[in-house]
Length: 508
Image 1 (cartoon, rainbow, N blue to C red):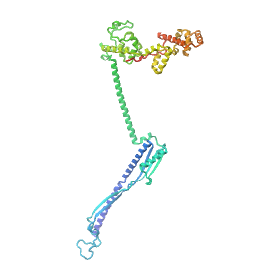
Image 2: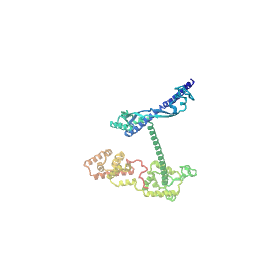
Image 3: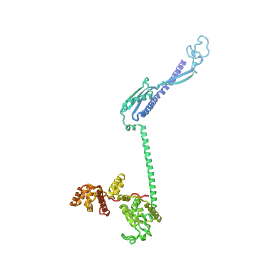
């Protein structure tokens, strides 16, 4: 009995161990059941991205979207093979031999009971093998959402392309559906994808860096240009000024105060002592006809430099030069002339040679153009100004300030027109009125006596004179008005404050 109980207990322990060994792989398998779903999601996403990239190349961005659902078989079969090395008498585990009356040596058991030594020292080999299905993907369901604006032919082509890419098989149960729907604008959907946001941020950063780089380069070029301009100005002026004592005059005088006493200062209207001063002061050889070129040459100079040049001109040339300058600029020049400065004689000599050389080679200018216009008749003059207005309006406006034309007579005041009407004969007015504007006739009638105007109308009623006579009469009217303007009796209607650059740029 004890022997049987031991066998039962042993058998029960072995059964528990075998049961635990069988349940352990099942528990491990059950714990790993959640992992395949992540693999399934990654697999579906990879296929969707591949198809979306191809559709974006074919249709453009924001025109199609693919949704894929794959049915995958993740079942696994575990096979466990146990191999044992059975002893020679394993086929007869029971003690049947000698059941008769023969004497037996060793252990004796009742007939039919297994021998204890038959399974005590068996060697067993365990072979564990996992069996997977022959095909993981059982079925795929693909949905293509297309923009409603795409034509049907493109939709059919997309269906064929996606079917070939995913190797869809109808026999396997694969399904492909194409749905058309209105798509939202790209600017509303681009912010929901991390890839698009990163791309936009990347290009924004590159643009900002490019703009900053361009600003840095532009600032560098501007500084370089400013430095070169400063160097050019310094070289051009030949360092004609040299301030001492940071603006303070020697001998304790304040800056800007004259150094000479009241008795030594020149009085207005006093005779010029150029005969004795010429031996002490260097004078620049500038003629009156060169003053317009000098004004053009000094147009962009500092008032202090212009004052230095003005101080070395003769009295007649200096007066004409200051008269041609604008009032504001000439006042700054006078202020600079009143200040005491010390300039090296070598610099003044260099400035004299350079200025005389440039003025000696200066040609052209507004005065030359006006002189050429004065030598042609009125008709040719009007034609030349009209062509000049088409090609160079600014120069034409400057010329018109100095040239009197027939339409300018209508701009005269009543006093000026009355003065001009009394200077010409009635016959001359009668001939010239054929070429003058209607506004001149109305104003002239108001300035003449009624009897004189009747005589003019009677002369005009005889018929239109020849173009040569009307031209000559009009020339006399314009010449008389121009003479009054030169004498200061009449103001030029187109005259304006004269700019600094009056005669064009002088040749270098």
